[in-house]
Image (cartoon, rainbow, N blue to C red; front, side):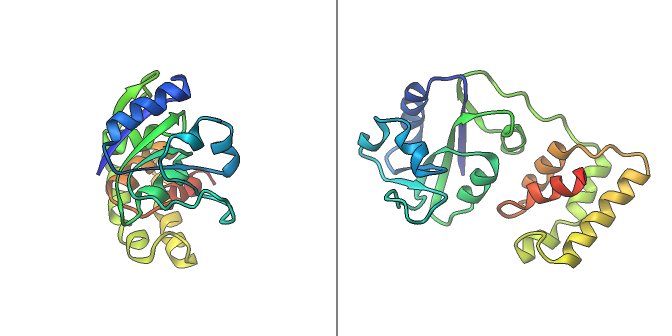
Length: 193
């Protein structure tokens, strides 16, 4: 899958033009809400399919197909890129929440300030995430209490043995190990708790 981003300091109309050029012929624009689309008066007139991730009653009903130009937070990006018909994602308005995604996939920078990469995790953290990878991949997340408990135990063991649990590094490693959808962020939340 192709991935790119434009950092939030790049003006939105310019970001959109660069994203559109990078995306190619089959494009869908996905935003977090109807109001996010309507905040840019010119966006509904671009002639591309528009959709939102929230409020199913929105008049913008396009599903993510082809390359998605997304003005979304990291949680929504992870959901959108897991779509079966998504071939690429370009995040416009990327901000300090996006570096784990950028680092994990070596996402191409198209404009604005370059986001600082998440520092590389140590071998113990990498091995732990790899070791518990079957839990979220098979069962679609850390929803079940047993799966969550196994993740808590693994992270607690690391912490008790002197390892620092950086939530961003955990997200990077979970993404690299192909954890589905929002599961990498669930793992980071467990580490914070």
